[in-house]
Amino acid sequence: MLLRLKVSIVGSEPAIWRLLEVDPSLTLDTVHEVLQAAVGWRDYHLHSFTDTDPHVRLRAVNGIVREPRRWVPLDLLADSDDDLPETDWTLGQILTPESGPLFYEYDFGDGWIHRLEFTGTLPTPANAPRARLLAGARRAPLEDSGGIDGYHDLLDALAEPGHEDHKNLQAWVAWTAGPWQEFDPEQLDIKAVNNELALMFPAPSANGHDPGSESLTDELTNRMPPGLRREFRSYLRAADLDGPATVEADVAKAMTTPYLWLIRRIGPEGMSLTTAGWLPPAVVREAMTELGWAKDWIGKANREDQTLPVLQLRESAQRLGLIRKIKGRLVLTSAARRLLDDPPGLWLFLARAVAHRHRHDSARDAALLLLLEVAAGTRTGWTDYLEAVSFGLGALGWSTRTGAELETSTVQALLADPREALLNLGIFEDRFGLEATTVKAPGQAFARAALHA
Image (cartoon, rainbow, N blue to C red; front, side, top):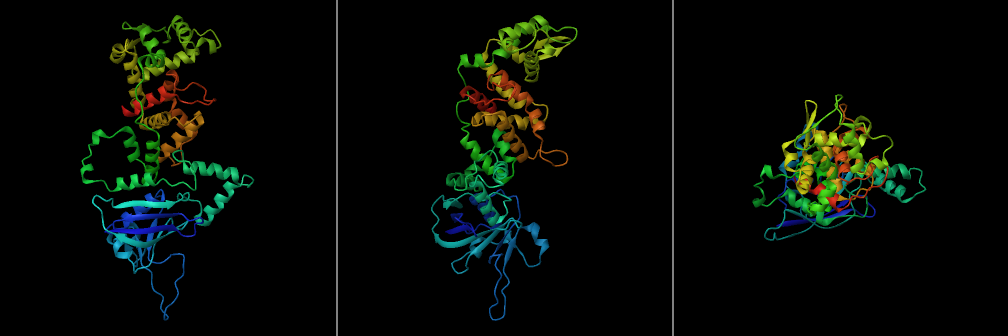
């Protein structure tokens, strides 16, 4: 048997509601998880279930005021001798045709009250999911928006460009909603909700998961808090990561030209550096000319320490594992030797290196989040990439030593190496990050290849 119930946020106008089919044997702690996914909360705050509206004062009947029952998580039981453990009670025990509504409160500060009404039962079809969203309207309110009245005030201010707080609230909403979903009060993706509910109750055949088969994006997803995990997965699905992850040989050759030129110029015999440890001036001039960089550079372009494009290319090639410096000479790694006449192989090698070769874990996470944004192809400027990666790093738990959010300058530094590689590959065109950049299909394919590595 499945229980059909309507969930509505008390006081919402127009109504925010969901119609669900739920296995009545689910305990309330699991029902909490179902409601978080179905309504669209991020599970940042405390919650409880009661059999009366917690915001309504009960009246006496025959001089007696009935004590409401309240079910809470185990870590809240110590605060009261009257509360009941939500892990010991099932939905079917509490929500019946005779019981009246059940109330679910989320975030005791904002006080989001959800009314759960029994609307019927039906036989359980074969292979029926234990929880499924049938219908509904409107997304969940934004977390920490001040309860239902505060949320209504927020929507009014957003709808009125002349409101004194309009711009500030727009910025707050953009940051709070995050880069993985546009804030639209009317939006509800029923398919995405049911995808999440299906993941909560996997089929028995899906339990044999091989940890070694976990993809880079799966690994990132599983490290995020559950609420943000749901939003991230939806964004991943929209990003089309299963699209093309290869390019034609001539495209690979064009994209890898700077790295290919450098490793061929160094050659199997290696190259001696100057006594100060720089590339010879003739090689610097040659690089600037043959790679087409001289026309945009002011100066003689013959000293590596004063010719940043060449210096950054050389340092990038070292970090990515193509060359190394030994006793005053640059020499090719064994991988670079194999790839001297294989541009498609070099293209794939660089994709894997951008994803995996990092000096610390925070830089790795930043690079993977940047690659995801490149694969999605929806950002149009470096500031947009920075904001998206900053949000993702926060979701993964990265912060300063005092627990504060990472500064933009810190995120910029974490992204310096992968961004340099993307610039050298022609995926990003604006080295100074001042102009809009629309990533083209080959750049998206490179990012997909990196994330699949």
